Length: 109
Image 1 (spheres, rainbow, N blue to C red):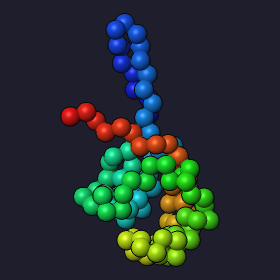
Image 2 (image 1 turned 90 degrees about the vertical axis):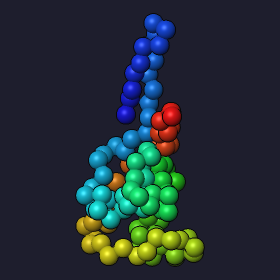
Image 3 (image 1 turned 90 degrees about the horizontal axis):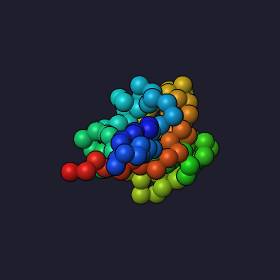
């Protein structure tokens, strides 16, 4: 996402992280409670943590293995095995691979 502002007569542009695509419905119903993207997430977003940049840290094979059995990749993973269909996992893997940018800065308070 690109934001612009007029600062001292100069147009300043700031690029913030945003997924290349909107999250699939399964993310909204099954993942967002415990995860966040660009700071937006559910009530337990600190439990699962941010997904910003996961697409630049992990490849498709790693994500599929993790989703099938999180503890096989991260022994102390808190994420449970999720009962999703193969099509839903395909959607999630494709979406996660679009999350390549850093987290957007938190809004100023």
